[in-house]
Image (cartoon, rainbow, N blue to C red; front, side, top):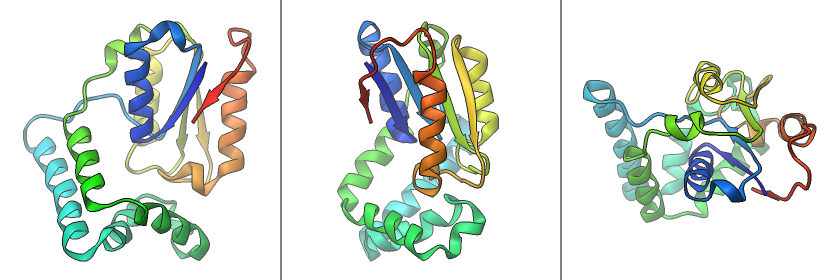
Length: 191
């Protein structure tokens, strides 16, 4: 099977590969990272920012938190795109502050996936919005250094929410990165 994941979903894909490597024949990691939370002040700063967002979600609601969060997550030119922002905020509103807290806990305690990347022997598409400020192209280039059989696809005019900002370009990157490789014979996507 082929797996694709975006952001935290890509970290879940990496965990699936760690647990069941023989079942996965290719994967796409979109707008994500692979390293654990940094130690020291940088790691403390990340934790504080995430906990501040959680406090907002608990005190003012998930939508209020999402309105803050989205500021750095889409391409700056898309910040006035009402339909795009509405769809992102609506996606967040389907979750509770408790859901968000569990996600934050998982992200703050995320494992180092370097060894998973280094052990891959499957086609891997690394996809990133060119203006992703949260999981930037440089981070994806660093992942590519660890992954044999990988390809890097940068999505123009997109930030961290590339799947929602540029869905057609993302779909093409998935096709180019996974389906057009001789190592994949019978694709079954799970997104």
